Length: 390
Image (cartoon, rainbow, N blue to C red; front, side, top):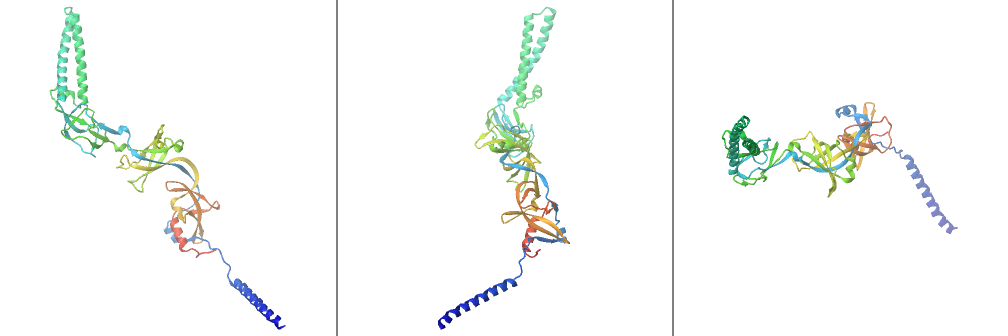
């Protein structure tokens, strides 16, 4: 019996300890209060609501655009660029402009001189004098011929000579006009030793390729001019997106020289030929409300609005990013305060200050949203997180 008692007592002791432990655990669980789920929200008093100028509205549909990404550069059309060349060779006697100068069409850029310039004027004067003499001779021969005392052959020769001289005078007059010399001044005996090289367009002097005293050949480039007021955007659109792009579509783009500024342009033409490297087409767009000092060659990044569709959207200021996710805030009035609760959304295309959104969970149709101050509401919620429960 003693042997049995030795083994039974430890078992009873162990059983008793187990029962006590189980009772203690049960009693401890009963003593703990029931846990309640904390609702995450930001609470604003009516005064805070008014100070922040909160905007509240329902989630409605809005006409939004899909976009095609496109990069390019600023350029000017060929008619807004000019290479200024002389029509006759000569020595540069003076230069009247420097790079960057604004010029108007017809302004003098430089003067050149050469003996041939004087010779053309002299030929014009001689041809003009011969024409005056021949007109008188023609009239004299005509009277003799009509009176029957003159030779018909002599009269015809006088007429042919007159027409020939008229052609010479007209040709030399045209040459003088090409040289920017007024023929009427030559008729008065004013021979010019130099001629003016004038601007063919309004614009700015981009480069000066001559020096004073330099001899320039006919058709050699003396100046380069450009009219930056006609600058537009040349985008490159890849093959996969070409079918979506057409004349009249809006393009939103940025330039590195104007950080933080988004400009708008409208497509005026779409090329029909593919560039091979990369395989893309040129799309030209005219800038709307063009700012000053845009320089051709500047690199631009753009997005072309190609698809218009009705979709749910919120202002940018109604959306906040937190932990890699995007949230908007529902708004409910509770007495003299407002409750704002975050709901996760998926963002889509953006247009101006509006962003396309899709809700992760279904909400009542009449649910209202905060249309601004999302960053503030998120910070307020995190500051008081867990401090308000329902």
